[in-house]
Image 1 (cartoon, helix red, strand yellow):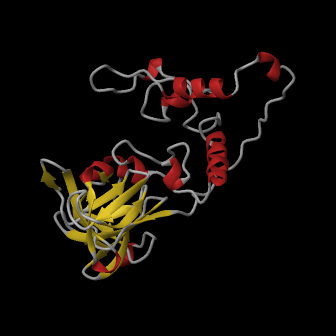
Image 2 (cartoon, rainbow, N blue to C red; image 1 turned 180 degrees about the horizontal axis):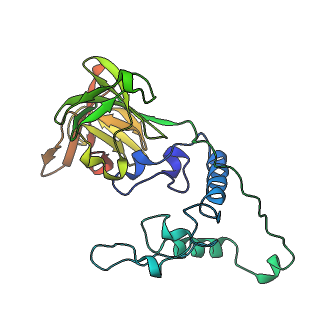
Length: 269
């Protein structure tokens, strides 16, 4: 996520679909500036509903269902991150980077200015052509990235369409009946209630060889970069007792090749 999207903080990610849901930033610098402003305007702002104390804090959860216990949770970790130990882990990282010394803060006046919330940065995940999806519930479509009740279309549960793009503000561009539409009906924290994607993968290796056949005995015909999206018509993968799982993928121009399934993460299944 930090390498593929310049997103050092996992901001915008959900446990169900962390990489695709997370914001994509144009640079690391812009990610840091955005997160700093966003946190100060919300989690560290006494007038914002996310404020539960001006510190990292912690979260207590029930043992089985992992439901937050409000009376035992505090600070940013009350809402921020599903990991109940997030605040403690971040504090540990901070201590390792620059150990706390009280004297560093004895003559410092806190900056009490509260900035406006920053605009969501422009950024999107563009998927390869031919990514097939099925609606798991009714989805409302619009001709542009804007809610327009007079020009909306509803596709029913079970309808198939092609997934084209997901933007940082959680609009999804798709193709249905050879026309392009936008929808904001898909909630990525529980995307399985809305869609199932049939043939989308993402490369997890630093670099991944594309081979002419489903084993390392075949010649290399290309390579893929880390976090690059792929379209595979062979899900589930072709299995070999000797060479493991392999996915056939479709390259630009329709050419096909094979990649090791050990280095492919299936997305939005």
